[in-house]
Length: 421
Image (cartoon, rainbow, N blue to C red; front, side, top):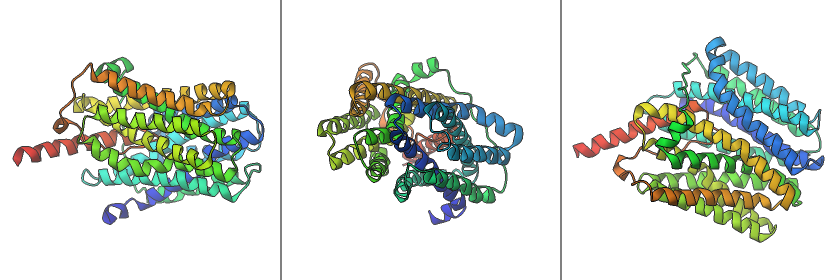
């Protein structure tokens, strides 16, 4: 493992620094918006704008890269993102923040595409699985670490926004200095949603609903904490718990994924998420019960994303997997735009604890649909399923396609080994 990481450590360091800056800005939006009296609906619109930017960037970034190259796109988007982060405290207004968040989301998507292209190019078929796993860990640790940095300043001032901008700016140095050549960036055209649904109804519907869950957790979690009177330190810990659980649950869910009917695993993880949200709603504001709810509800979200990708690939040919991956990323993005809007409306109308009700209802919908689909289609035999590989919901189509290709290769290799033994 050390030998594998020795060739990509600078890229991973840059990713950690990017996620530190981006993770700070995510929570800061909720903190500062609460301080300045933004409503839940206004902050929901601001949150959804980021997802809209990510979705747009995922489609347009490969086109920009083909026109002007990786280095120019990376540097340009990085500069725009850094400037956008500094601009937030200059114009504290939800209608000014909405286009800024759209810009930051667009830039972040392009940064993901470029960095993941370099990372994919720096790995081989033998090392790709370990490199992608290390990438996932680096991203998650960056987001969690960002919450710790928020405790060092006051969200009412511009200092934390400036700190986030600095982190994003300096993150480009290790990435650009370590990227010796421009890799090829070819992202498959996303599969049409009708074809994607026809191939895997559960994968399509499930990942759409999961997009709503993920964006609500990451974007509205700080808003919820602000509205129930948490301190800034408590909000930072709450958001960190939403992501910390993924580090714990990713491996056991991935291990089970290659050994049982994945639909039962989707049902179980979703049911656990729904139960955790119900617990968060019932507790009525107790600090540690809320932290536990965040840990379990957030902990199953990231593994479910990778689980839906693997499940969908089980019903596709190897040739269709890249296009399906792009379609799933797009579907997830649509859900991520809608989720915060629904949560914001509910929190505005029914109070802040509607945050848990919306999340719990969405988890429950995934679980019930998984049960329904079990009555409509036979399970794929476990020895014929594709390998599971942890991929974060923030990954661009580049990483998702690379993970899918690696999983298909691993599954084929395992089947050859079984046939020979």
